[in-house]
Length: 273
Ligand code: ARG
Image 1 (tube, rainbow, N blue to C red):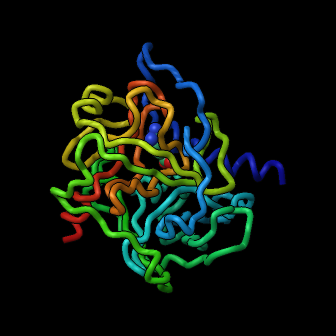
Image 2: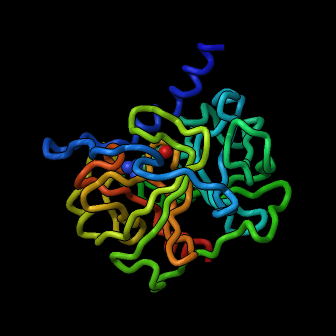
Image 3: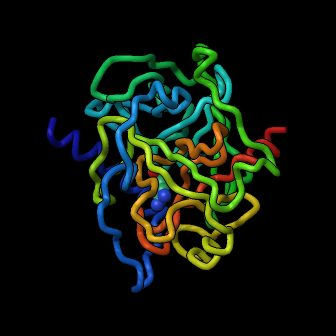
């Protein structure tokens, strides 16, 4: 039992290793880490489009099999990160994971509230680039519809929600410390949209990826402290009530000078047409 838990939590860390950049000497973990990191607990009723991706078969049942986040943009359409569907993470292609599900309406993974809905189909962006991490999104089609109020609108190109300085909120069940402390219940952190130039200089290219302004969005706090972290990938970044990003990658979590990198939702809208 204990062994199973260790294995289950070890898997997402493979992902962490694969997508984490080694920080420069100047970067240091910011103080006051907690949550998503630097966040606060929220009820999923406040962001009903935020869902957990689950496979107990792959990740064990301790936290209902949660391994990534997702966001409902249609009653049977959930967006997540392409890297969440990687064979390296799932141990098989997504259509071979027998119990791939979306969990909606469940704040606390240890409870049995809300719904678990089977994933009927998975589509991974064919332009996803594992070197830069560009195009990090996948579309899941659910076997049954979510309630109509569990859907969020996507912000298209030119939407004011993408303006630098805009306040945004990121949601997830991921690591709350950057040291593998996976949350049992949903957390959120408030961040701001940052200039592309900040992420371009923070992430010119390295083991975690390379920042590309056309397909990625830079968000966080200049001083660090508030950020998404491992296990949050695929989950929503919301500004002005619209979806602007999916948690994708970054160096560490909440580190000064290393903002979070998100999949730019306007690029998803453009791709999906
Ligand atoms: N790659 C991580 C995941 O799969 C997300 C990392 C986000 N990191 C960050 N510092 N914002 O869960």
